[in-house]
Length: 77
Image (cartoon, rainbow, N blue to C red; front, side, top):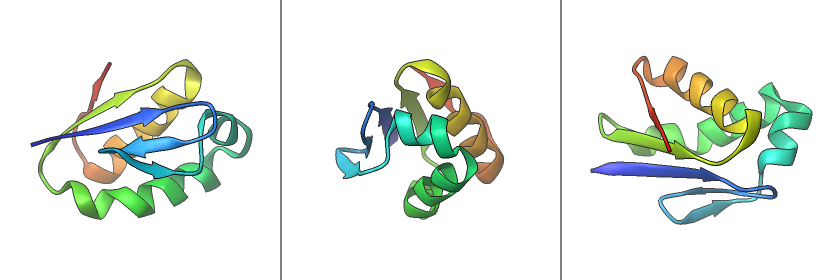
C-alpha cells in the first residue's frame, strides 16, 4: 500500500483524511505544526511506502521530518 500526504495552503490530506494544518501554518510555525501532523499520521503508516505532494518549502520540511520519524526515505511528487 502507498500512503499519500498532500500539502495544500490551508490543510494537509493523508489518504484523503483532512488535517486542518496547511502549508501556511507549516512555514509560519514550523516544528510545532509538523510534529502535530506527524503525531496524527505516523502510527497509521507502518512499513508502507509514503508519497508527499505539494509545493514550496513545506513539502520538503514535512518530508524530511517524516523521514526522520520513519527512519527511511519517502518519495516526493
